[in-house]
Structure formats: C-alpha cells, structure tokens
Image (cartoon, rainbow over all chains, first blue to last red; front, side):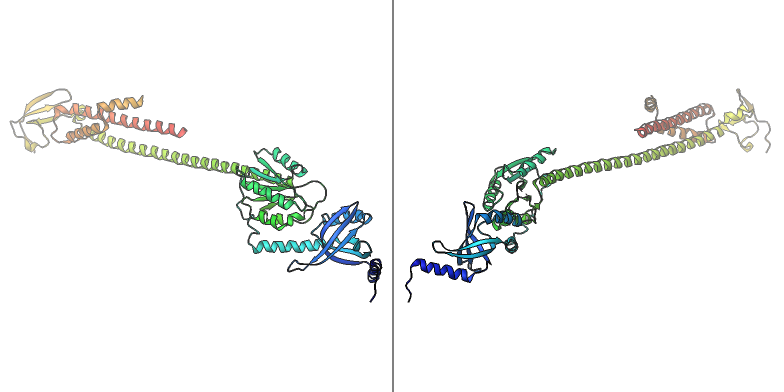
Amino acid sequence: MERLDLIDLQKRLECVVSEAFKEPCWVRAEISRLDVRNGHCHLELVQKEPQTDRLIAKAQAVIWAGVFSMLGPFFRTTAGMELRAGLQVLLCVEPRFHALYGLSLVVSDIDPSYTLGGLELERRKTLERLEREGILNMNRELPFPRIPLRLAVISSPAAAGYQDFTDHIGASRFGFRVELFPALMQGIDAPGSIIRAMEQVANASIPFDLLIMIRGGGAVADLHCYDNYDLAANIAQFPLPVITGIGHQRDTHIADRVAAMSLKTPTAVADFLAGLLEEEEDSLIQLSHRLERSVHNRISREKQDLGHMIKDIKGAVKWLVQQHTHTLDILEQRIRKNNPLALLEKGYSLTLYDGKTVRDVSTLKSGYKVHTVLRKGAFDAIVENVEQ
Amino acid sequence: MNNNSIMKKKTELTYEQAREELDTLVTSLEQPDADLGMISAKVKRALELIAYCKDYLHQVQEDAEKTLDSYEKE
C-alpha cells in the first residue's frame, strides 16, 4: 500500500478531476449561499431529495469577477431577477481541484431560461395549493365598494410609483383619503415586510374601503416575491378587496391573480378609482334626471286629466241648467195659457154664478143673477132666456 | 260679486223654495174654479218667480264656468 504526502495526494486528485472533466459541463443545482467578494461571486450549490428536502449533494462554485461582470447583468435582464440564494440554476462549470482549496466548480455560463422554467413550475404548484385550500378566489369574491374613498396603500414611500399614485389621486376632484403603510416592495424580504404592513392595515382603528399595493419606477427588479405563497395567501384572505399595481413588464404574478383587481401601474390604479367615482356620479345624475322626468310626466298627465274633468263638470252644469230652464219654460207656458185675464184683454168676458165660472148654460135658469167680468170693470145681470 | 249676490238671494229665497211655490201657483191657476180675484196677483208672482229662477240658473252657470276657467289656467 502506498504512502503519500498530502500534496502528492491532492496533486493526483487534481489530475484525476481534470482528466475526468476535459470539457466543461452543464450542472443543475440550487444556490444555497451566494457571496460577492472583490467582484468574485462565491456560490454554495446544493441538491435536495424532492420529497424530503434532505440534502443529498453540496459543492462550492465560483464565478470569477471577469465573468461575473457579464453574467450578472445578463441573468438580471433575462430572468428579471438577481442571481441569489434559493434559485434553481443551470450552470456551465469546469470542476477544478486545488491542492490547498479543494474542489471548486468554475462557472463560465448560466442558462436563465432554466431558472424561469423552475419558477414557472413553482408558480403553478403554488396556484394549485391555493386552489386546493379553497382561498384562491376569496379576495375576488368580496363585494367591491361602490364609493371607495378610504384607501390603505402599501408601498415604499420613496417609490416613483407611489408619487404617481398620490399625484393622480390628488388631481381628481373626489375626496380620497390615502394612508401609507410602508413596506419593502421587492426582493426576498418583501413578502414578510408586506404581510406585516397588511396586518397593520387590518388592525388600524379607522376602517378602510380598499387595500392598494403599489410599486414602480426604477430598473428591472426581482418581482419573484409576488409569486410567494405566504403573500398570496394573505392577500387572498384579506378582509378588504386588494388592488395591485406592481408595475411589471412580464406576465402577472400570483399576487395579482388572487387580488380582487390587478392593474399594470400605480397610475392606472389611481385613474381607475377616479373613473369609478365619476361613473357613480354620472349614474346618480342620470337617476335624478329620470326621477325629474317621471315626476314631470306624471304631473302633466294628471293636469290633462283634470282639464278633462273641468270640461266634464262644465258640460254637466250646462246640461243641468238647460234641464231646469226647460222646466221653467214649460211652467211659463202653462201659466200664460191659463191666464184668463189675457182673454179679457182680447174682448172676451167671463161670467160667474155663485162665485164659479159658468161654462155650460145648463147650470143656469131664468132669473139667476150672474156676475160678468170685462177687461175693465164688471156688471151683474139677470138671466132671461136660456138657449140649450 | 256674483257669489255674494247669489248668497244674498239664497237667504231671501232658495231656488228650491221658489220652485215649490211656482209649482203650487201653477197648479192652483190650472184649477177650473180658481179664485178670479187672485189670478192676476198669482200670475204676476209666478212670472216673477220664473224670472228669478232663470236668473239664478244663469248665475250658477256663469259662476261655475268662471271658477272652472280659473282652474284650467293654472
């Protein structure tokens, strides 16, 4: 059996490794630690057993400063996030064994699409979990307020997006009240920070109508935090409708999917709210017009009916007066017909016997004393002869 | 004015009273043995009552129309 100095052993291992990996190779791994020192990026790569999460492999890797100055920005712009711990990556590496530092994987390239694919898979799993737990649509099913004026805003106070939002809300002619609950809006600490701010909103002494989450402005940022399960679960179960205006360039995130409403930018959120109130105001004006019109129509219809009634009453009065006048005319005719004085005027005379008008000579006999009335005066006479 | 005059006449004699008296007068004038001495006065009174009743009716119609017209204008 050989006896070797450590340096010889290490040298031989170095040879074996360089012999075994003459060409670089692509390796899949998860970044468990990442440090940038003097421009060099030092990584700790791991692999876990999928079911148990138990560590089954671990290795050191390095991206030398010259390479990292190109790979870093390339990954950031392509994947939309910083290279950081927790990401699944596909790296092009050359395994190197150094007598003093041991095994290290020297990174020469990275494939961001692998990381994105892994995130997409994770996103899908998170969505499935939210659905399984029955909370996926909870926030979207909350009744949306008709007049949301009291707004709780979670944002970074310095963000350009927050400034845009308050400018647009302030320019509207409605009395919005905005209260800011500051939080980190990007990076891996964002979900915890946002959740703490949400708790403050929920426990605030003054009630709010809506919770608005906005971010925006600045360079391409790591918005992977908006696919975080805890944040999504908190948004989904929040007692107020949540509107997101995260301002991302790519597809929507899970936070947008569970929120009651998701808009592209903070400005869009402000304009949407102002538009909502304008619509409400318009519909109120419409209603009052309708009310006015219907009352007017009703009154003019009633007036018309009353006009007809007045005509009916006039007709009735006229008819009644005519009836009475007619009766009076008949009475007048009867009076004139029966006025014996009218006959005397014409030269006729009237003869009375025993105070009664004589109409038949058979009521008279010779020697009766009768009284005759003329137009002027009267005289008494004795009946001499009666002619039948 | 017209209202007042009607009211005044009403206190003197209502239309119904006038009609009643008129009916009685006409009936009595139509009796074959009407008292001659009263005929002249009864005829005069009957014609007066007819004039009064016609005037009354005329007033009623005029007043009614005036009142209804004022409502129509509103």
